Amino acid sequence: MVKVKGLPVEWGMCSRTVFLGQVPLALSYWNNTIAIGSKVRDIIIINGVTGSQLAALSGHTGWVRSLTFSSDGVSLASGSEDCTVKLWDVQTGGVVKTFFGHTNWVHSVSISADYTRIASGSRDETIHLWDIQTGECHCVIKQQHSVYQVCFSPKDPQYLLSVSGKRVWQWDINGHQIPPTYDGSCVTFSPDGTQFALCNRTVVTVQNSDSRAVVAEFHAFNSNTYHCCFSPDSRLVAVTAGYNAYVWDITSSDPHLIETFIGHTGDITSLAFTSPSSLISTSHDKLVKFWQIGGSSTDPAATDPKFIPSTSASIESVSLQARDGIAISSDSAGVVKTWDIVTGLYKTSFQTPAKGYCWRDAQLIDGRLILVWLQDKKLYVWDAGKDELLQTLDVSESGCPRISGDGSKIFWLGDELIQAWSMWTWEHVGEVQVERGWGLDYLQVDSSRIWVWLKDSSTQGWDFGVLGSSPVPLSNPSIERPCLDLIPNLWKIKDTVTGRNIFQLSGGYANVNAAQWDGWYLVVGYQSGEVLILDFHFMHPK
Image (cartoon, rainbow, N blue to C red; front, side):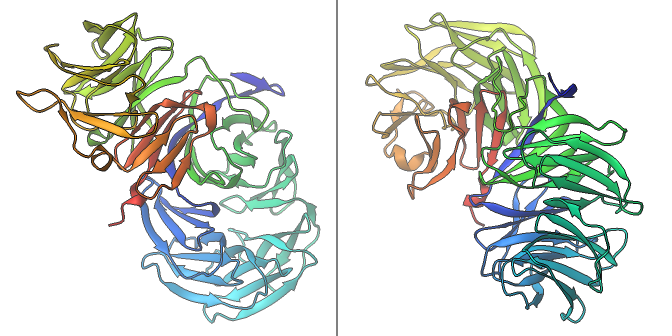
């Protein structure tokens, strides 16, 4: 933990990550349903608990810049670069109405609390107020600059705010301006409408909606803030600054920073609370990240918004067991953790002797968490639950250990030799001579089959699970293995069928040796101690 301007800062935990495959531009959340607008024109609906895609709403012909749910979650309004506003039925995914009238991009939309009007702000320098029942434009408010944000008060449906020309304006529903105006590039109401937060460069001011009295004010580091939101209980305010997000407690006269979220590799495009202790964020890195407040580590966070922290407890290995719903990580401090791959939340941890940099692997086998690591030409097999050494196996040189996907064997790969032992009996069950320069396929997890790759990225595999025979070569390893591949040294994940690069790990910050892929999920370990779980179910349409 470090101090920033005298305030304690903790580095928050990313509990789950979903890869969109597209740049998100807008985000809205309601009761475990996430709506995301993007550059591909469709609106993606995601389950806020599992991160799985529920639907794609098609109809816009331009990028979707803004989204907002109605207060009951039944409807969703969207604004697009096609100059239209659409109202959607969330249950059916159908368009209820399309509102025409803007002559340039629609940057922002808001639905009144009484569900009678939609406000839309546009690049055409106007605010349109639409009658939901008739679809007609009730009022046009002209401004002198593009309108980047509009929002109705949740408390008073006759009152709204807008952002235009780096100023925040106040209006009634008849288009009459309510003084004063404020300096600011972003504004948002608290859920009950009693307060609103203004972002003006590095300063965030929270004011009472009725008296306009300043409730709280704080400096959000040395970077402009473009997004902010209140927690459901209005006790916290989250703001973004470049790649990072920060959460402030505003319940006292002295607001204080309680959480710092670091992990995106592109500017954050939107942020929303999903509960009083959790948030979601979208970014130009094409990721949706789920963050847990209070689930932080003691790793130091820097004041530079683009700083990527480093710790002595980097993730050295990960394994993925989708059948058990978990991922397992082992860090350089010897701590082995299990993670829920659906929620992304940490479940259990075990201290082991496997400290420092060493090749290792872990797996849950028959309810027992087993860790194997290589040190001084010996393979150590450790029962983490019982905290005891099960076996020591001699090998001829340094190399890489791996527990087979079905938990029945331990593999070891040296420069020219693959060996396998039976789990529990420790009987040597087979070996294969390979050419120098080969290496384990770190992404592969599948029964008793193992793959290796050549420097030219070609692969060869063997099945060690055929009873009564030596390891059997796989006839077509490029087809039988999953369709993703990790490109060494470039930290890219490639679709081997289309050749398309579909995900970019964040350079040296990611440990490319600590990654596994099972055809549905990808889990990657980071030098920061973070475990990234990516859900690729979108690649497998039903």
